[in-house]
Length: 250
Image 1 (cartoon, helix red, strand yellow):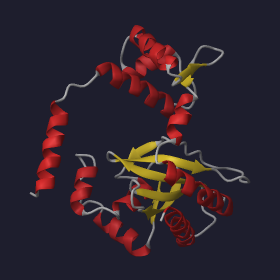
Image 2 (spheres, helix red, strand yellow):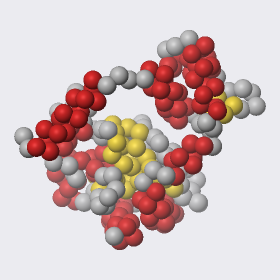
Image 3 (cartoon, one colour):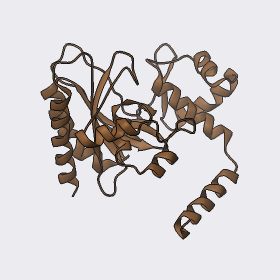
Image 4 (cartoon, rainbow, N blue to C red):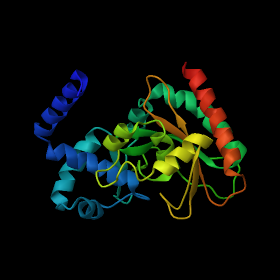
């Protein structure tokens, strides 16, 4: 083990020993539940999702409302607040700015929702997405949406950028890092990854890896229903867009 590895291990051990704030954790969980919901939720629904009494949810909401992180609908249900949008714009700001024109072009050319997913603590988190202007049926891929690195084309694409040891650290504890070797090798050789019915039933995805110095490891991807374009053609178009993003940030 190198000195850097020992330092990382010591830092991780110190973090494990540090006390956690249950209130802060619950407040963050409120935001996560609202982000994952299809629409506003009642306080009773939030309490059920968190497994706590409604009085606790009331206290959490008062603080979150004070900071503009949640708001209430006319019916009194709870939804995410506008302040979150301002905070989200600051996450990997340069990558978002460089990706947006390329995503817009890809989405409108292919008629598919295009997005950038970044690696975050063993999960792929949607950073920015664009839906096509003229399409009869599209898939919403909201920023903040997350899924395990172990599934989906974006997860496979990002794994092609990792060593075996890095994959072991990033993947969930119950996933062996060698289980997807063949799939990752195939994605590496052809330059893109493909998935179907892995993250959302009935949805397909094609993704390419996106590695930019100074930015989190990422994947540039599309998600769609049905198939009107060959996966290799989609992969080629995504690879072109990824080159454009890297050039903009170089």
